[in-house]
Each structure stands twice: as structure tokens, then as C-alpha cells.
Image (cartoon, rainbow, N blue to C red; front, top):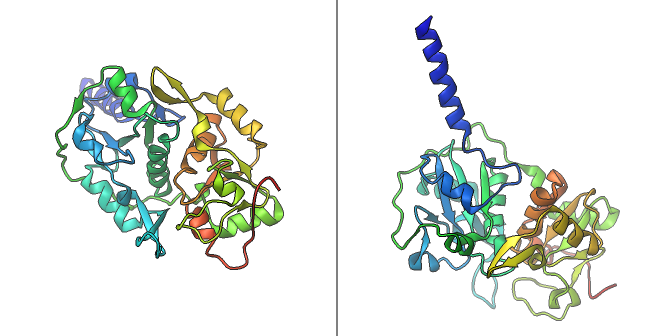
Length: 315
């Protein structure tokens, strides 16, 4: 009987240990949370800053680096930039390789962080989160305040490249999360039927008014019926660090832009980069769940579809 009880206790402890690193429901962790779990073997911290060269200068101790090419895919070719145009989640093979080389296992908990030094760079971590969730890996979160917040609160920093054991991540038993991804066809339906709202994450920029000349897209302007909400207005600056605003703050920003948070919203931008911010905020900060979706190809993709009409200005 004692052996049975002992076995049950051990099993319970193992179960609790396995559950201990489940990310918060809002997929956001603060510095205190991250510090408290730094020693956990299932934790993987990913530096997803846009400027990957900063990793060598200093990063959160133990973090691995994800460059844009590790979780984004370029399609089409710009004669101006001489490069493929980014705007899509990475191919399954690329994502699998990225996860494995980062030491990520099927039972890992992954925390992404951006720089935290500008009002819109949280989008990098949000985009990494989006890609992971799309491929069925949902035990992920972003660090509020990013690297700047980590340093401000005395977090350990290193300049040494983190060495990790190759992970065992696989797609077996997973289901790609189609509910967060919108396609060009979904956008067509939203524009013509109004079944979903569209959010232009570039805000009322030159793209909105059609005066920009971006080589990544073939036409300027915005989707008919879209609402402009710049990704950068969703953060709050405190002591030089940019943090995500809370639910009431975010809801107010969405509402002021003319968006109804109780109805589906498709976020887009030029290449699906900025759009990851409002997608994340809508889904997790406001709590819209799967009503918040993102068009990963965005205008780099949509402007290459024939007979699609964009409008300019506040029409």
C-alpha cells in the first residue's frame, strides 16, 4: 500500500512539474515570471529582435537567436530591392529546423522577446508567437517590455552564444491552427460582404493615403472599408521601456479606430509584420480569441492579385 501511495505521489509531483510552465492565458509574461522559471529545463527563451546583430552585444542569459528568415518566408521577387518579399510564415520544413536547432522539444515552453525600445517592436515577438501557434505549438508567450524591460529590472545578460542540445520538436499529432490565419480569399469576402472587419496596422500613413512608393507592393492604398490602427499606439512607455497596454487601454484604441471587438477582425499591413501586433493584442490582451486573425501575406500579396481595388485616403 505504501509503495502504491508513494508511486501516486511521485506521479502527482511529475504531473505538477510538467504543468508548472504552462504560459498565462494572455500569452504575456513579465520579468518576475521569467526570472522565477529561469532554471527550468523545459524553458526556452528566444531573442526575436528585428536587429539580430544586437544578440552579440547582449541578450538575456540562456536565450537563443531567431533571425527573420528562421520564421518568415519571402515570396515573389522585387526588382527594386533585389530580394524576395517577406510576408509569410516560414515553410513547415524551415520551422521544424528552427525549432530543433533552438533546442525546443515537444514539451518546451517558449518565451519570445523583442527590443522594448520602441512603440511597435513588440510585433517581432508577436510574429514569432503567431508562426508558432499557426504550426500547432501554442505553449508560447512574449516578454512584456522585451530586452529593455529585462535589463531595467536587473535580469542577467550575456554576450556568449547559447549552446543547446538539439530539440525533438515534431509535427506528429499537431494540427495547424487555420483559425488565426486569413487568406486573400478571406479578405475578399470581408471586403465584399462585410462578414469581418479589416484593420490596417500601418495606420494613417503614406500607404493609407496612397502616396508611398513601397517596392514590396504593386499598388498603394488600403482595403475598402478598412479601419486604420497603427500598431505603435497599443503600447505604453514607462521609464524608457515600452509595455503593452492593458485590456481597457487596448479596447479603447480599437474602439476609437471604429472597430467592434465583438466581431471578427483581420489585421494586415504591408508584409504581415506590423499586423502581428494588433492580432496579438486583439486575441490575447482584449480577449477576442479566434475572432482576431491575420493576413500574413498582407498587401505584398494582395496587390499581386488581379482586379482587386484599393482606395486612398478617408473614403
